[in-house]
Amino acid sequence: MKTFEQLYFQAIDGTLDEADRAAFEAAMAQRGINPSEIARERAFSQLLIREARRPTLRHADFFSSSVMERIRREAARDGAQAVSRSRGFQWSRLPAWARLAWGGAASLAMAVALTLALRPHDHAGSQRLTTRIFSLHEFAAGMSATAISSPVSHYAVVWTDGIEYIPAETRIQ
Amino acid sequence: MKCPSTLRLAGAILLLAAILLTPATSSASPPTVQAMVVFATNQPTPRVADDVGPFASDLSRVFGYNSFEVIGQQARPLPDPSEYWLLPCREFYLKLFGRPGGSALRAYAELYQKNKLLLGLDVELASGKPLFIRGPQWGKGQIIIVLQVKP
Image 1 (cartoon, each protein chain N blue to C red):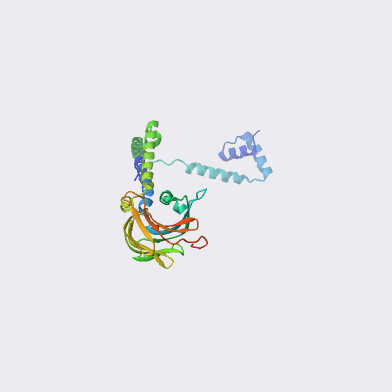
Image 2 (image 1 turned 90 degrees about the vertical axis):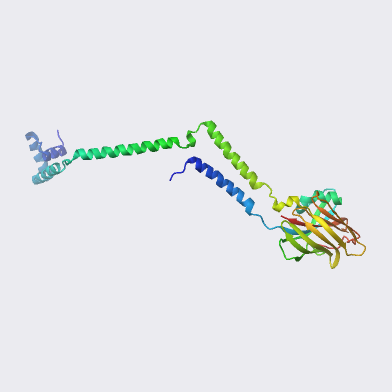
């Protein structure tokens, strides 16, 4: 037993046999469908079939050879790029020992850079200079002063005697 | 233009090195001359002020004390006007007639206690190498005046 939709499309395609035609017409009458609608649908279907044919290509050989030539060119270019990539430096393709060597070299470079950056700088040869006292004059009565310095010491000293004692309760801040 | 990974790696290392090296060479602040009045005592538990730390062992060796407290200090940048005062505290101050050059300061320094001139000295102060002047006794300790050029 065919459904109404199957009978409908067979009618449009023109493949409806006589046995089913009576049943289809009865079903159409029952659904209130005008038979002229089937004729219109059939005409439209035939128009689509006629116009939807695959267009024939003139000079097909020329287009086909052009397309094939373009494919060959692109394939050759992709191949050359793949070769150049495979010849270039790629971290992931390096063996473990080479990666270790590169890592070591980078670490060494960083260590050298850090050492240079953090080392104390010699400001205009300050390491060679020392504090020196060339002359000394006492102005306070009863006071004496002695200068002590040497080229190898880190400091120089003026040793005084005779400066008046300051009582503990005196604020000097 | 594509850059090979080797060059990128080398560039990154050089950039890092440049970043690390730049502050070390360009961040040099101008040196300062500093006067500091230190009170030295002998304590059962030695205490050393942070500012005295770099030369505390020298002070101990020279003056025989183990505790050092900073009473006052003042610093001025170099180069500075040729004649200027350093007033680390109300009791002691210094007048400097300086001729700064490089990291050393050649100066004639006068040490005053209040309005009284105690001594004058012609001195060359090297950077980071202080001058210690033994001051008077104060209470149970000793006043030490430190004059130094700080890099």
